[in-house]
Length: 180
Length: 308
Image (cartoon, rainbow over all chains, first blue to last red; front, side, top):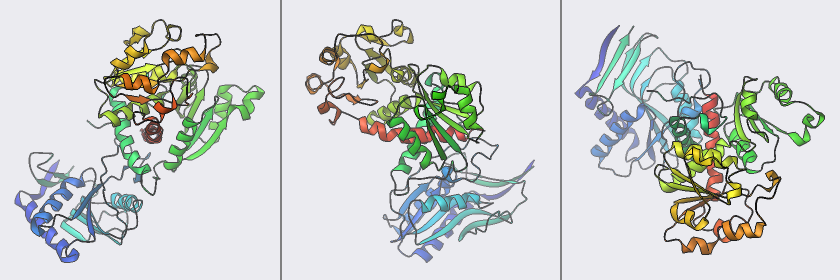
């Protein structure tokens, strides 16, 4: 088993800064926009982005929520992995007619995002939905889904694993590809 | 360690671990959000068919289960014994096997005989949820009761809960005792001595025959219905006398030095175990219990259906 580092240390904050400026470019003062992180793992990333965005813009009114997709997964009763357990869901605003930015850490098959789109539209009809990911695993898609904001794009083989660690849940900020 | 639900069936609270109960509660929190938004439905169980088999009457439990199933997008078939071939002499196993051969994945059953669900679980392959088996258990009621206490008081641990009334004939009482104790609450049963099972103390509950003492002791009073349909002999002289000694009224509630939470599993016999001014007061969480019932049942079915 070997591993290769994709992102580490201050590369995280540089990447997050750049993504924040890309958001500002397209969303102006965020008056009709909202950021939504995907539970369980995407929320470490989305919280960082949200925190940094508030720092940069000094705008305290940016809407932020967290979405759980457990009830919408297409592998319910089909996966041999651990039992699917829901995580906390926290959206205290209406998504109707808002410009939503979905935020997740790794984009691979696109199935999580498919489920998230279903989950999101059960809260209302957004004006627009965009996707931000920290790591885009190209060439692995099962569904026609692409990110609008990408931290870094990597080429991996199907059996590789991409692991992201955060200071909040681990010792350090680190993203790596693990090859068996 | 990853969490998972330990049981294939929900036959009784007795079989559940504390972790199982907490997992049901955490999952129910999510479903409570779901049922309070404009679109109250999720697609999780769209490939699951559930049969609700009721050999005894029910209003709340049956509607609650059916709503829960529909909000999980399951397909539902309903069966009640009075309008079926059971009256022609078909056995329980035959009835259920016939229903299952129509490709049913999950069975919710209420039956007048204690242990009916356990018996069935040994003979068929589908997941079984006990919706009340005679005087034995009513697990989803106990889960929603404890969940409602957790919601109202923040937690169940360390709380004092008095279960008051017809303990002898109540499946709600037994399931509640198991559930509350597993979550770290203290439980007292209170009622006329004729309606308290002789050895109930072996379950580790306090026993009290004086209503006022029980009310002064508790944080939560769960008032049970007198189950006249299960009482083949007279256990007390009259309903009027029962109501005078064990009925909860506003005067008794006001005489306490503290606020207590009042619960009732329904159906209420207004004026017998509880008066209208108490049942409809701010102390009462009876309708919250009903709302939580749907979320709890969604959680139970989601967890059972999603087991590997």
